[in-house]
Amino acid sequence: MNTAFTKVPKTLGISDFRAGLAGHLAKAKTSPLIISDRKGGESYVVLGADAYNQLFELWEDEQDGLELARLIRANKGKKLIPWEKVRDSVPR
Image (cartoon, rainbow, N blue to C red; front, side, top):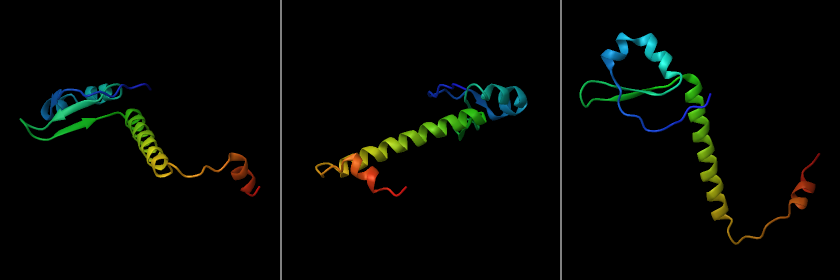
């Protein structure tokens, strides 16, 4: 599944969502739905499971990138260890 994650406006009130629950859940498989609770109240996002998993994987990739950038900054100026030396030191 290829879901595009962009900001979406609040689209449904909670009563409208509840009234057409089955149809709205079917739509949530392809596009996130924003449900608002009364005027100016809380808002909720409804996603299909595949879209949620894709979003979570994107978040994990972002966290990995941030950690890599942090490690590169922390290692700046330190002597590098040649790959061959690392490879040969690992027991087989």
